Amino acid sequence: MQLDKIVNYHKALSDPTRLRILLLLSKGEEIHGQALAERLNLSQPTVTHHAAKLREAAMITERRDKNTVYFRLNPEFIRAGSEASLSFIFSKGTQELEEQSPENSLKESVLRNFFAKDGRLRQIPAQYKKKLIALQYMAEKLTPGTVYSEKEMNEFIKQYHDDYATIRREFIMHQFMYREHDKYELNPPEMWTRWENVK
Amino acid sequence: MQLDKIVNYHKALSDPTRLRILLLLSKGEEIHGQALAERLNLSQPTVTHHAAKLREAAMITERRDKNTVYFRLNPEFIRAGSEASLSFIFSKGTQELEEQSPENSLKESVLRNFFAKDGRLRQIPAQYKKKLIALQYMAEKLTPGTVYSEKEMNEFIKQYHDDYATIRREFIMHQFMYREHDKYELNPPEMWTRWENVK
DNA sequence: GATATAATTAGATACATATCTAAATATTAT
DNA sequence: ATAATATTTAGATATGTATCTAATTATATC
Image (cartoon, rainbow over all chains, first blue to last red; front, top):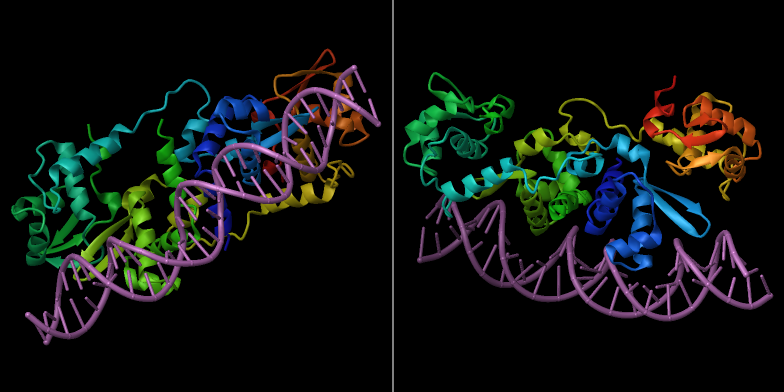
């Protein structure tokens, strides 16, 4: 197994200084060692240290001209770089970095505001999108492949909210679950109505 | 800047134990804490430790049933997971893991066998694909945006091989460089003839 | 050859973290 | 209540690593 390769790849990207180096190089221009040290406010040996790690991970290439070593993003790395988390590196040009995706901040705020500390749902969100977030959160706590009786469903839901009838119906309506002869079963996530796609 | 978010994401994936956990969960089934500890040959507190990190990075979800906590891949993580390095997790089903991509092993072997320790090219590879690998390696050492005279090109190439005329011609022929009025300039990598696409 | 410049290596320090054992907590069963 | 089971927390240890200063190496210039 090549686990080590994957580990090293992510290790290379799990340091803020190295990400800042990639960010500086992402404009496409070369930068030499001392310039990097100045712009990062670090000593030259520290730059050498990080450059070695980035080179081992094949993320940059180096070119020597007289006494000076110039660094550049490895074209291979750019070509292969379809990683979501690295979009800021590969997006040449003018797009801005979003502070935080509005999607995730909405999800976090719903989970924070509609669920109490003990885990119970304070109230069923009225707004469609937020309701789906709450439903999905609860659906993820069910066991896939398990067939639930109506009574078991009610018990499960009651740990979150007393109005089990409404929530049970919502689970069916938005394809989180499938019902047949009063038996309930979780649908695969691909079938769920995704709040990310709403409105 | 949300550098920290990216750092934490990659930190979560830069540990072999955590990758093994994700691999075990990648079959889609739930696994509880003790079972994980046994299958990984680790103590239960160690599993708790890693589970916390994976949960913070939103890669797994947990569900409690009686005394037992069951872990599962977070459906969100699966949906977002288009990362090349994580394909082994998201490829449900039967595809095998390749030990190492034959592409990269070919590249490595060319660089190892055709270039001497001092960096010089022993001989120009006769096989088309291997020749492209060697040409690309040298092209990456040129400065993009710089206009080279023919004399400068010869000097540059001679540090690798004495037959600068042949290599200079190959650079043009395979679109690594562009020539006008005996001035040479590096093309953008998108234009290069890629050995990966050959044969 | 002597000097200057940039990079690297060596060695030290401080901080982070993966792992363990032992103790504490949470939940269920008797 | 008490006992049983699974997890979590606390604390200890060992390893890894980001950073620095000082010394060394590599290359070019005088």
